[in-house]
Length: 53
Image (cartoon, rainbow, N blue to C red):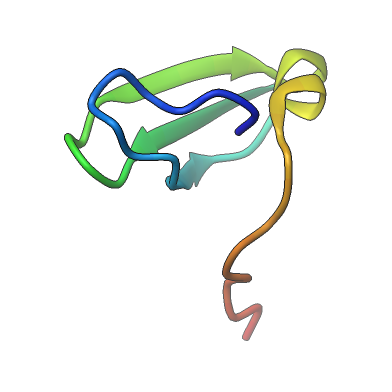
């Protein structure tokens, strides 16, 4: 994400994709739900891609 989480971590894991996207902080395990368009604006880059098998 463009801004880091207040816990100091800047890595997030996507838990659920749909009309809304739920992400989870890798540092403190706080969960946040964002609308898809807001997530697209705030996302900076993908660090690790998931296996699609």
